[in-house]
Image 1 (tube, rainbow, N blue to C red):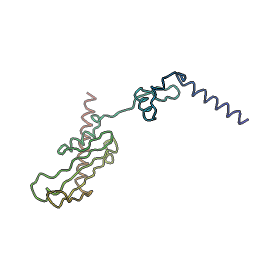
Image 2: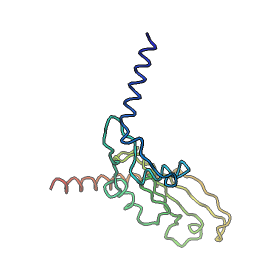
Image 3: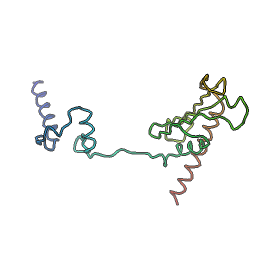
Image 4: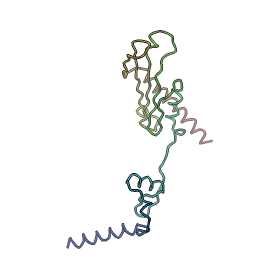
Length: 180
């Protein structure tokens, strides 16, 4: 009795799967089909092929662009005094280049900082971003003998606060323009 139900269910599922195929017996030239799996996947993506269940539509992804994310824009504006080595919106990270202060003292020329901002959320929240500061201390001007350390400093908190304040201002401005 259980075997009959199992076979019936298996036949029904097979029928549903096979009926979802548009034309399973399409004749193709073997030279048109890539040999490796990676090349087949790339070709299917380029042709827009995919899997849909229950006749659903293939939908594009939802993309949040950097220009509409207030936290990203605020971070760029707050850190505009230094160049970036990596600014990856999709990766959720900003990394500045090494920089030093504007003073001409001997000590400051041998100390440089690098700021990393990690985006943990698109929302304007204190736990939505993480600011990490690295310090590079060099023994001489040639900068051949340097130590790099991650430092805990009030600078990190100040930058984080400045980013959050600027993001809140940008959000208010964008809501004001939407309502007008």
